[in-house]
Structure formats: structure tokens, C-alpha cells
Amino acid sequence: MLKPYRTIDAVLNSPLASITPPAAQDTTDRVLRSTKLEDSIYADLRNDDGSLHQIEQDAGKKLASFPALARDVFQSFYSLLPRRHGEESLSVEARKFNAPILDHIVQSEDFPTLKSICEGRELPAYEAASEFISQTAGELDDLLSDLGGGKNELNTLEKLEKSEEQAQKDLTDLLERIQRCKEHDAQLEQSVADAANRLDSKRRQVEAVGKMIDTSAAQHKEDMTAIVSQAVSAAAEKAEEVQNIIGAWSDEPGKLEKNEVNTGLLDLVRFWVYHMVEVKTVRKIIKNAIQCNLCGDIIESTDRHDFVSCKCGCCSVDGGLDYLRRGFTHSRDDFTELCILEDTKGEFSKGADRKNLAGTF
Image (cartoon, rainbow, N blue to C red):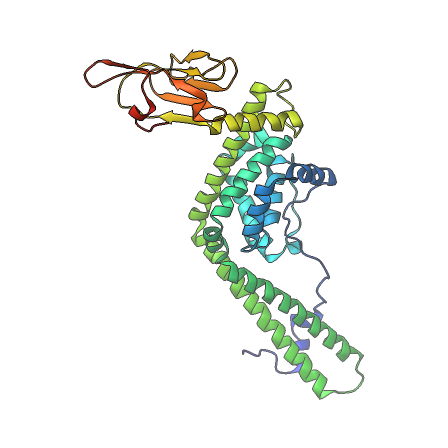
């Protein structure tokens, strides 16, 4: 090990002579500040969200600061003016991983659109943040490799920084003892020189590992940007979906907060969309229709974007003469197929069976 300080004079004539004890400060994984009101809003939105809890739990095994990233992503989308904690108060993972992810979010092409929908609107912001976190969790291994050089490097840097703080404290304690000592003490002077060398060594190690992590992030910037941009795009689509659903179906379309009506609408419409099926057919569509088996209503779609529902709301058709799309609430037995297709001989097949359609129901 390199020992630049061999005597007490070498230490006293160096910048280390005026070193002060490290400030006692707890670090945080949260990059962004938030008010008590914002924390309360997020806690209410987060309540009973088992899916996000599981994602955070699984990702947290790889990156302890991941749950804090989820909170900060919501804050970034929702807050009118996001404010950051000082870098000195951040944990290594928050400083080297979470903060760069948040930077890339803001720099992404879809962020202005996302922000315009989510700012000050809790439900779109939360839904968008959940979508972003879900996407990011699936790419966490690659992001850790691209942005931090891997989990082990982040852990190594954290341990080295703690060792550096301890070495700094040890040196300042010994320097204070030297100042109080009225007689020459060779053993104490050697202890000061040894402590100075240990601190110098730890600083060099911290600098080397930190530089390695930063170099890895710079080398993989394009890959990491692509992952974050894709997640932001998905988050923007989710925010627009929430805005459109509530805007179309709610009596108070501008009230984008979590309440029984809004969450009920989202659940209902998403359940409906989840049960949409599109059937591929190479034959020409002559008629696009079904009959609801619950209310008996016969419904027909005559145009590509002509979405028609039966009177009880159980079934729907869409696609006109371009494609066959069916919607149903309970099961595929909710309706009877009435479409008419032209067969290869130019004849018509009326009330085509599902088995005769490519990509069957």
C-alpha cells in the first residue's frame, strides 16, 4: 500500500492537518422531497395495491432503493415543482442509480405529454408511475449493469464510503490528541501517520470505484436511455387511458382523483377491454354482427371504427367490414355469431361458425 505520510510532520504540513470530523447525517433513498400532504395522497393511492407491493418487494431484493424510486417517480409526475434532497444526504444507490433514472425520465421525449396529464392529478400520476415501475422492474438487471456497473459495485462503494468516514473520524480524534499532548509521544505520532495513510487509501478506493461506475454509466447511456424512454412512453399511454376513461364516462371528468366512482369506472372499462377479442379472417366480410344471448339484441358494426354495444351492455362488435372484433362481459358464450363471410367460390357463408374463422373465438 502506498504510504505518502511517513512522519507526523508530513501529516501536519498537508491538507489533512485541518480535516474535520465527518458530519453526522442519516442518508435517504428518496431523491425528491415531498410534503406531508403529498405523502398522504400517495399512501392512500398505494393502499391495497398488492401488485405494486409485490413488484417492489421482488425488485428490492436486487436494489434496496427500488421502493423509494417508485415513490419518487410518482412525485416526479405529480408534483408541480419537484425538489431534490442534497446529494450529500443520498445513499449510494439513490445517488448512482435512482437519481440518474429520474434525470432520464425528465429528458425523455414523452415526458412533457406525461407531465401535462399527471401534474396535480393524483390518479393518472399514480397509474402512470405504477406502469413505469412495472416496466423498469422487468429491466432491472440490465439497468443495474448499464447504470451502476452491477449491484456488487454499488455495495462496494457504499462500504468504502463508510470506511472512509470512519478513517476520517479516527484521524481527527488522533490529531486532537496530538494537540492536547504536551510531551513528545512517538507512538502517538506514528498512529497519526498510519491513520492518515488509511484515510488516503480509502479516498483513493472510493474515487476509483466511483469512477468505474460513472464510466459504465457513460458507456451504456444509449441502452439505458432506450429502456427508460420505453417505460416513460408506456406510462404516458397509461395516463392518457385514465384521462380518457374518466373524461368519457364520469359526470365530473376534470376530477381525476381516487374515489369510488373513478376507480369503479377504471375497473369496469378495463374489464371490458380485457375481454375484447379480434378474429382474423382471410375471407371478405359481408356482414359484421352478433346476437346477445342475454338480452337478445342483434347488433351490427358497419364501419371500421363503428363500436356498437347491445342494450344490456354485455356484448359489443367493432370493425365494420375490415375486421371482426368482439367484446363480452362474462364469457364467449354471451353472444351468437351472425357474421357473413364470402368464401373462396364467391358464395356467402351466413352465421359462420367460430371454428370456420381463423384465430377462432
